[in-house]
Length: 434
Ligand SMILES: Cc1cc2nc3c(=O)[nH]c(=O)nc-3n(C[C@H](O)[C@H](O)[C@H](O)COP(=O)(O)OP(=O)(O)OC[C@H]3O[C@@H](n4cnc5c(N)ncnc54)[C@H](O)[C@@H]3O)c2cc1C
Image 1: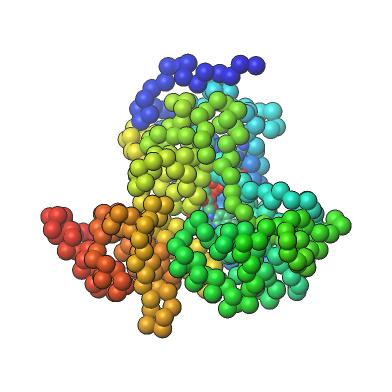
Image 2: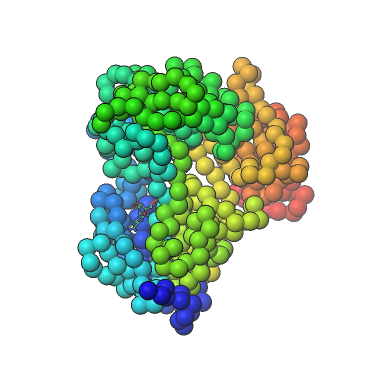
């Protein structure tokens, strides 16, 4: 079968206002925000929001945090119960799109039905990276991505016993802290030499490690899982060249992979995600894409990047809603991110991919407060621990391209940082409204 040529049609430029049928695949943070923003921006046509999940759009971050606290903690809905109905959004839950007919401009669903579109938006997110070792397909092993995964894991939580968390990234560490707080004995295994290796500075990683160890959580870095033991139900984790750890439950948090199967099958350009331009349009001008599943020209880095965060998905949705209603809006918002690891609120403003210098701020008691990350002398990211006001100010500094003097950053003093921000803006003749 030959693939349709996605360019073989007469399509108006992105941004041309048109009463049209917009179909969104995926009702996570990006898709749900896009549907709401299209209504707010006055989209005159129809909006169809399709989700493979049975749950109405909900916040994903709590799944590895507060949702695990008690057996009856409810999901946090992204919008009020009747929002989508009241706004006339046609929401289809439990509906998986199995293919896209680009030439005929329609999507085909698993139940055999089809939905035509004038503009299609892929907001398909990611799926959990599966651990590929013998024994992984047993009861008691969980990969955490959806409400369904979280419910299954919560139901299976032992009252006591041992949990082994495989993967020292955000989701694994959030879950580890939560499970330890529930009284379980928790051990984290990480293949890299230290936790959060790709995500934060070494100083923040060390502070998080010390915090988790203080909660009684065992941390083993530089270890590789060989296989999971058990006869249908997991009972242990075997390490390469290491001991066999007893486990009543195993939680796997080894990252996520972009959900690009539909895009690839439709012939859309994909390279570590669905490739888009700054207007979030794919290689097919009738198809846009947002959120965790895309690789887009990242303004701060000056190159293509794929980010996984609520901010990225929702801000892209807002920008795309403007473009699709006739106000072409290249996406260029400053990235920021947060993670709640037990009582530690870690917040990151900006992107530290190219950082070559760190300015470290310590509290009076010696605890880490923040790390200012520079690239060639320019402030590109700030990581803060339980310092929300500093995080908000950091966002403004980076967005405005302001790098305070190193002594000011090292002081971590809010008044001095604010003064540096104001002085830089005054020098540029900018009005100080924010
Ligand atoms: C446990 C957990 C904790 C997290 N914590 C944080 C945090 O603290 N801070 C933060 O910034 N981010 C956090 N994230 C990441 C954040 O949730 C994602 O970045 C965000 O959800 C991305 O939004 P999205 O719309 O791109 O994708 P998603 O929200 O993942 O939504 C994609 C949706 O598309 C649906 N879909 C995919 N394919 C199809 C198909 N063929 N047909 C129909 N539907 C389909 C999926 O079922 C899914 O519902 C966390 C994620 C998880 C899983």
